[in-house]
Length: 94
Image (cartoon, rainbow, N blue to C red; front, top):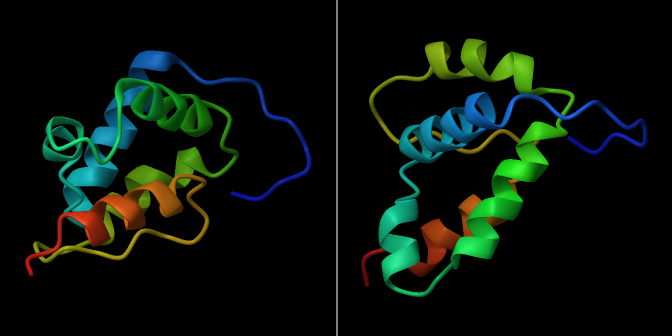
């Protein structure tokens, strides 16, 4: 979420799982991205940190619940949308 107002960082564990769930809902295979060098551990840590500061993160569970089984598009409000998009593009079948 692009918000000029700072937000207190949320619990690390909660935001780790929000990021994992977002990756699953969107089809972005973050483990494979790590294994294939698309992202590194610092990228993953930064992703979770950005999630922790996101003012929209309370809406994630509602968004998750509204998604079907097919891979969903990352919401534009997600500050990690560019990372998920990069992973999806890099790991897309040729």
